[in-house]
Image 1 (cartoon, rainbow, N blue to C red):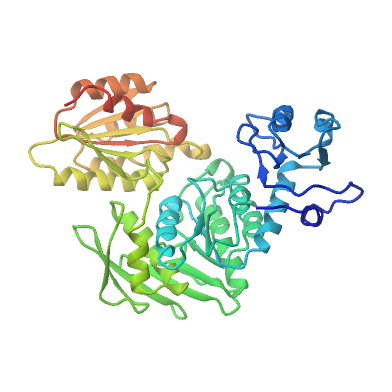
Image 2 (cartoon, rainbow, N blue to C red; image 1 turned 60 degrees about the vertical axis):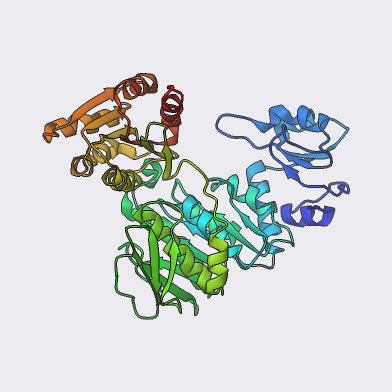
Length: 469
């Protein structure tokens, strides 16, 4: 990538600044900057990029985008591009860079399943386009989205951008930046309720991306199994709407439907969109992931992929890890590592999948449910935790281990509801892992689930190093 003087000037509206050099790229991390790049001194909640301006210059940065307060740190050896807001400047640059890209840009949004769907869609599209740009991991916010867009090159045939929101107004800003040619919203569920407040607000904000795409007359995919997402946006300009359903939902007028049926072996049989009689092996376990694949196939089909290309692309699938990831210990125990994040909907999906794994185990296994707090659920967070009790009781679990003060409310509710198994609460992962290692038996099934801030991966790390054969 090369960033020329005129491009930067136009993107940032610069005036009265001497001629800038041509930059080899953009960096926001002084530790990974390369000679010839432009360093953007972003300020986050836990860091201030301005503090690392000297390191960036020492590593070869030719110029720095910074705010006036930190311009003196640049000195006279490099150009200081002074802006009011470095994050806004970064996003302006990314928006201008995205507008220069001629291939389709696909956005994946939703409360749950975004990253898995994005990974599946990226794989499918590689069946037609050898080089696909996709969001790395879950870099789907104010910084991650422009970071992804700035990696676009003429060699990319298509881009798949994951879009996440945690406050009112974020989706509108992301839509303006990404300017998607196609969009899919996976599902609507409780998420980031500290700032999004309630489900109607979540639905309204998530659906904005469908409305944005519809206004441009582009492609949108509707999850017909989600009551929040079955309506075609009214302000459409000849948009092509594709609906997908794993539950046999009716297809609304003006929508092209794709139906799927999932077998016990994890094979997804399709009908509609010219795919009658076509089937695919779902690369990730669980009914929710089958629905994610169905949505990805619908969108890929809308972008012109034929059966062979879909099949070829899916064979290239690589997941992002810690999402519906099944791992097996040497003694035959099955561990469902699903701890990348947690919400009421994703915990319910994890419980369903753990139950399926439990029923597939031979002998007399025990199902262990290890749950860490679900974070960012707002004022009613304890109600959301207590609300998990019917789903837990409906499983075959006799061992429930709750980590954190919020999950303690679930433990209390389970006891109140007369749960027949053993319920334990923990303040730290060390004690939970210790009890799990000591008491589990060969062949047991273990679900590990919790929000990222709970660091539930440490439970797996302890379990995996306990010396089991």
